[in-house]
Image (cartoon, rainbow, N blue to C red; front, side, top):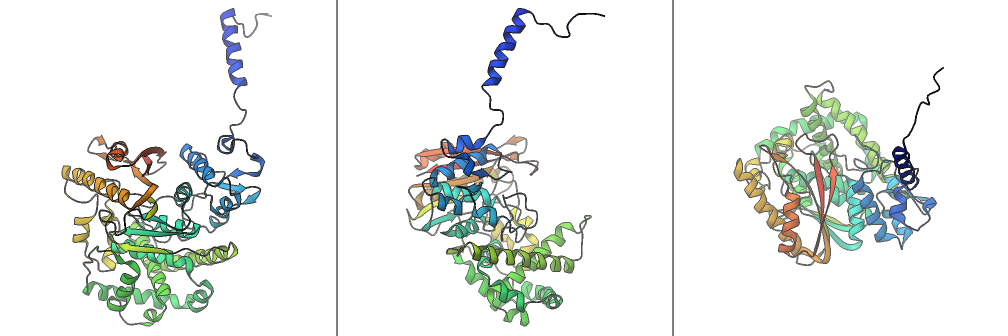
Length: 455
């Protein structure tokens, strides 16, 4: 038998092996991010959510912890990324159990976030952590000048701080207002009054209302109208008479949103293996909404959470209708250059409500101009919007801007870098950026950046 050893080392190899052994001895057997976030605190009494693992999430977890580490009871109520705080379950762990369609872990779609499938949403959990870092509470105001469907306002009002959202798309103003109002809905009364047997009649009412709505098309000026007033006008002057119209404003508006959600599902899924009849989608969504409303009502009541004041305005981020130095923090996600055509994506919604899209398209940031001109106009508008954010921020306040990189032609834009350069020119004293990889998102979008600018 051959007695040659399976492995043999020459002296130089042995020396290298010793170096490698010394290196591995310095590594942790299991990397624990809590050591970095909590430093010297008792790690046994804290736990992150199991799905908190990306670098930007750990950064945000540390930032929110640093803000509230001297008041752990308050931190338990407000944290976004901690499941356990000081040995007790966090409020977010319970709120995120009110699950919505398509919910992944604890990041989004919980509570009323999932109501209406708007394509440009960002993650509620991430927004909550940024509000915590900003330190907004009570009568402080958090602003979102590119509000979309209201993610920032939902998180702010649940945390317990006042909020203002500005959106140029009147349909999204209506959607956001309804989602926010649903947080205060008297679920027992709603569920006892509106029964399954009523659904065919409710569906038919909204179907028949389509002709009525389109006879009286809107060309709504973005002049800082309150979305609640727009919603009242819509019902009083545009919808036909009928039993649905006699329900309280919040109830009939919620039923309208369920119908519009079904319209979106039907529109986008009709040629797929998930296709169903429009009416079936309406019934399914009604039951799903009802489950969420029940869970939201019971959970907020159990946690003694009374949603804070919010205001949704139809207006422009280029002319924010707030006083200088009046806002504690800004959290927003502007249009990603030309990555999404926000009018086309929600055309079924706009058309149903009878909203004229020509003026909207000519005023919306990211949709102005054609071809090469689009990018130039987008850059001009972003500069103006950041100037406005600076104006309304209080001294030492923070603006958090979530922005994606986009391919235009064969060139990948980098507005994150541009905005970091603009920040000191506009007057910000500090500017940071965190990189967030897009997993399974749009092919043209690889990363989002969270820009943090301090006045």
